[in-house]
Length: 236
Ligand SMILES: *[C@@H]1O[C@H](CO)[C@@H](O)[C@H](O)[C@H]1NC(C)=O
Ligand SMILES: *[C@@H]1O[C@H](CO)[C@@H](O)[C@H](O)[C@H]1NC(C)=O
Ligand SMILES: *[C@@H]1O[C@H](CO)[C@@H](O)[C@H](O)[C@H]1NC(C)=O
Ligand SMILES: *[C@@H]1O[C@H](CO)[C@@H](O)[C@H](O)[C@H]1NC(C)=O
Ligand SMILES: *[C@@H]1O[C@H](CO)[C@@H](O)[C@H](O)[C@H]1NC(C)=O
Image (cartoon, rainbow, N blue to C red; front, side, top):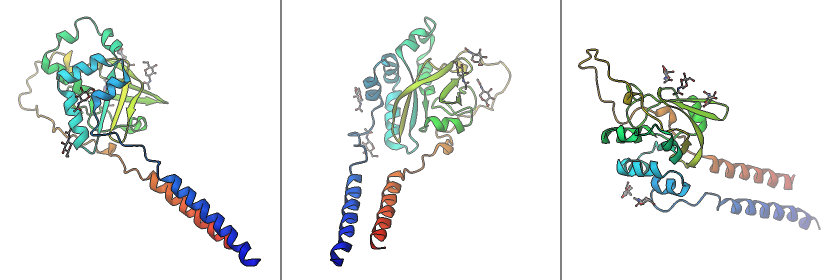
């Protein structure tokens, strides 16, 4: 009698623990096949046709895909919808040179991945792919509540939604095309001959460094501790 009574809770605990740990294994989301393709993500979302075309024509889409494949910092993309492009004053895009179109696209790319809450602690101006945080391409992000606003000095925009996020890439829909200030201010004729230095292409966006995601491990170890306690309790 006695042995039977004491093995019964043991078997119960063992079977619970086995179920828990086995249930754990399929949790990670299936990795997408191959490297991330930002164009494909935007296409799938719809309503970004103009942005996609510009990203492709300027080859900035290729740059982003290469960065996603090689950089640990990841990429954040502000994606204006087709209707945002139609809201631009007529002729705006055509007034830009090819070089400016490249810069315009790069201005919508941040060289690290930002979650909405990371915007809260980011220091303005934020570095974009168009140039360091200093100088002619400032981009400021302000957060209040769950609203994320962006200002460039020319454009005020709001993040209207999240199109895509993973550990490497965040794509946010914005309600206006982000126009860089430098496209609209004529450079002052002040004599400043040698102060212009090209910013290094890898700015120190280090406070956006992703911390390694250990939440899965935490869940498992929590369950193991719980099992251990159950196990002890069964013999108490
Ligand atoms: C990315 O996706 C686009 C659209 O689906 C496709 O045209 C392009 O070839 C893809 N690029 C790569 C490198 O797979
Ligand atoms: C991604 O990077 C790996 C090695 O880092 C390379 O072998 C592969 O060709 C790259 N893929 C693309 C699409 O650039
Ligand atoms: C963001 O912009 C909206 C209007 O576009 C404004 O009402 C709101 O106060 C702004 N929020 C912040 C935090 O600047
Ligand atoms: C962006 O933020 C910086 C630092 O707070 C500030 O000096 C600058 O005026 C801001 N620019 C715009 C366009 O809001
Ligand atoms: C952007 O917002 C600032 C402050 O909220 C305002 O002074 C400025 O006029 C706005 N600019 C545009 C283009 O709406």
